[in-house]
Image (tube, rainbow, N blue to C red; front, top):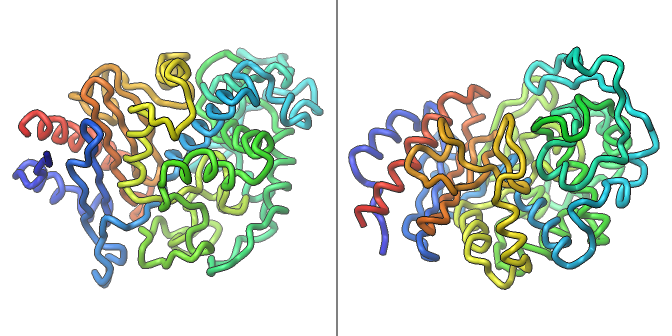
Length: 399
C-alpha cells in the first residue's frame, strides 16, 4: 500500500511554505513496517535551481541527532555497561572536580547574552556528583541550556570542509574542559530545562563507555547493524559531495559563510563536527527506518521491550513532556499535529527536521527540511509540521 500526497490540500500547503519557509524538503512515511511515501521537493541551490532534492539528499538533523546518541546510551544500559541511576562522575570523573558548583544561569542561544540565575536560587550551590544519567536523558540536571562552547573550543572558525580532513580531537578536549566546570542554571532535578550541554556530556560518556569516538559508537551500536548507511557526521570529510547535502544558514556571526556540508550548530562545528547534541546528517528514509526499528523492536537494536517502554513513558514534565530522550506528544500545539494519538513520541531539530512515531497507528514519519536557510524564525516550520502530520494521518485513513 502507498499513500498519495498529491491532494490539493498538500499542494496548497507546499505552495505556502516552499520555498518561503524552507527551500528543500525530504519526507518518508512508514506505516505498519512498510514505506508508503518517500519523496523530496525543492532545490539545494535555490538561486540557480540546478540541484533538485532527491530521496538520497542528506539533511542536517540538528537535535534529532540526540536520539541516536541517547539510544546508543540505552543500548549500553541494556548491555550492563552502565545504569540509568549511575552518577555522571562515575564515567566522567572530572565533572565533579569543581565542587560545589555555583548557580549562575546560562546564555541565550540566539543573542548569546548571559542570563542571570533565577532569584529562588540565591545563595544555593550544586553538588555535581548528584547528576545521574537519567537526569541528562530527561533534561532535569540543572545544567545551563546553552553556552557558547565553540568560542572556547576553536581558536578560530574552522576552514570550509574538504574530503579527508581529520577530526580535531584538541577542539573537543578544550570544549569538554569548559563543559565540566560551567556553573549550573538550577538545582539538580528541580525542573525540565532543555540543555544541549547535558547531551554533549552524555555523548562523551557514550564514547568512553564504548571505548572509542562517539561517531564510532553510534555506527557500531545503531546505524551499522540496522544498515542505515546515510547517517554520518562530517559528511564532506567522509566523501559525500555537497551536491547531495541540503545547505543551511548563512553564518554572518562566526564562519562568515553559508553552512553547506558542515553542521549548522556552532557548538557542534566548533567541537569538530561530532557531538552528542547535533552533528548527524541522513536521508529521510534512514531517519524513518531508525524510527521503525525502535517502534518494532528490531532485534538488531539490542534494547529490551521493557527499556523501550520506559523510554517512551513520561518521566518528567515541564517545558516538555519527556521520556528517556524521547519527546512525548502534548495535548496542545505539538509539532506532531492534532491527529497523532496521545501516545506519540519523537523529536525535532532546529534546522527544520523531525521524527514522529505513533505506536497506536504503527506510523513513523521523518520530515526533514532546511528551514534555517532563510533564518531562525520558528513560526513557519511549526505551522508546516503540524499541518503536514495531520494530512499524513488523514491519507493513511483514506488508503
